[in-house]
Image (tube, rainbow, N blue to C red):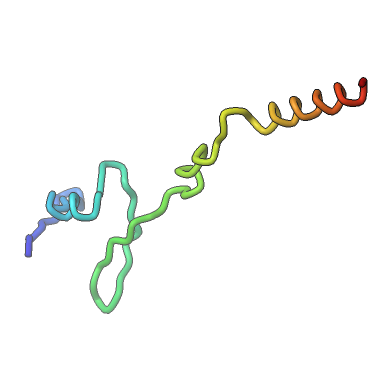
Length: 79
């Protein structure tokens, strides 16, 4: 089990084997919790919906689709 040391600034370095295993990258944020006298680093999900933004995005916007639909309805009424 790796041993880590706290720097004079209160910082610790997470060993690379753990960073790789848990896919920890620069800028990731954690909540520090105490449980039964032990410290736990719990990953924070920063704005999980922001990460999903655009996943379901289609080729046209909703507004564009509605405008096309409306134009077709007007064309049908003219006939």
